[in-house]
Amino acid sequence: MTHEAVWHHVLEHIRRNITEVEYHTWFERIRPLGIRDGVLELAVPTSFALDWIRKHYAELIQEALSLLGAQAPRFELKVVPGTAVQEDIFHASAKQEAEKPKLNPKYTFENFVVGPNNSMAHAAAVAVAESPGRAYNPLFIYGGVGLGKTHLMHAVGHSVAKRFPHLKIEYVSTETFTNELINAIREDRMAEFRERYRSVDLLLVDDIQFIAGKERTQEEFFHTFNALYEAHKQIILSSDRPPKDIPTLEARLRSRFEWGLITDIQPPDLETRIAILKMNAEQRGLRISEEVLEYIARQVTSNIRELEGALMRTIAYASLNGVELTKQVAAKALSEIFAAREVAVEPEEIIRKVAERYGLRPEDLTGGGRRKEVVLPRQIAMFLVRELTRASLPEIGQLFGGRDHTTVLYAIQKIQELAESDREVQKVLRALREELA
Ligand SMILES: Nc1ncnc2c1ncn2[C@@H]1O[C@H](COP(=O)(O)OP(=O)(O)OP(=O)(O)O)[C@@H](O)[C@H]1O
Image 1 (cartoon, rainbow, N blue to C red):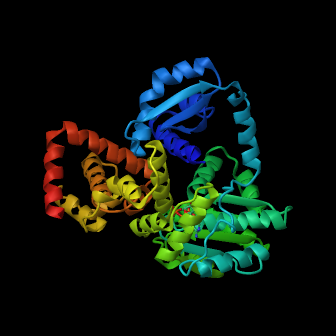
Image 2 (tube, rainbow, N blue to C red):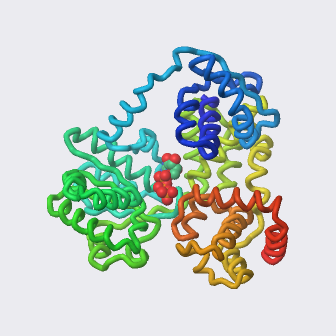
């Protein structure tokens, strides 16, 4: 099913580069058919769509394929009327989603590889899934970016949904909770908001560290928490750090977060990383040699999302270039990502140097300020962290005050453009790279 993985990555690239409306109109209806002799074959619903896509998006699709390592990126469009999606299907499915908990079907216990790094968190999650509201309440899972916190939370959700179909499950990111709260206040719908969150049996809240500094959200969450807790409803929270390290978290919330069980997830060891890659490959119906899996597992050590990305990239590279997947091919596929990042420099050091050059404090760059004087230096710092370290886009977002990865991506693209057109930026980048080397 390699072509599906390839198409998935192409879509991710496209989505970042066009508007949502364009994406829904043209790309959601395309289905990948396969890869033949390095050519990606795509089914489109009508000949009108075929012409339009060829005319307007061919370059973007090719660009995405070359980012995946295709040396001669090629694709072919075919009209397959069955791929048409009725206009209102989007709306119908959106409605259904709102009612069902938004759980990723892939994030189940069966798909979760247990290793020494996550066995405690896994055992706690299983215990909670078996008797929600009774085992550990709240269950607080913390750990670095891309280590499986969301996966475990969703796994509990799936398991509870299966065992206790009558229970109401709600998964929400802290960002969404905050936005919904703001909207409810603005639209005078607070009673409805409260009812929604206080009537659930299992509440899963992701990235609770983002509640830091948001007084009103903390206040509201405090009451939601109490209502659920008192009614013996289960709460699971995830965070990138333990409660005691979340700044400006009200003491009463902190102590509540500590009432149940706090458990962490550490980066996986080599064996666990290989096992995760193996499972991923098997799920896609692919047989990949141990040697190749180990090679990939040795390249990416601290983020499972990136580990999976590296596997995908390798598979895509081999199939788009029509070659067998060997260790040498894997090395080639990954060389671009890892070669440029072998300089041993810490992100904090980069931030410090960039701040110094612009006469700012490091906190100015990592803080929330949007003054003109800090925006460009911050973007430069993000760009250099990406270039000189192994930090992923979400990790960089975290370093810079919990910004979204799309903001980081935008910053990087911006500096890439300026690095070609603006002499001042070229000079600064050259000087900083020298200082940091
Ligand atoms: N133990 C595991 N076994 C199999 N897959 C895993 C495991 N841990 C993580 N993954 C996979 O790694 C990817 C990232 O996991 P997830 O999104 O749960 O991380 P996270 O810790 O919530 O990250 P973030 O801090 O960005 O929210 C997912 O695709 C997930 O399925």
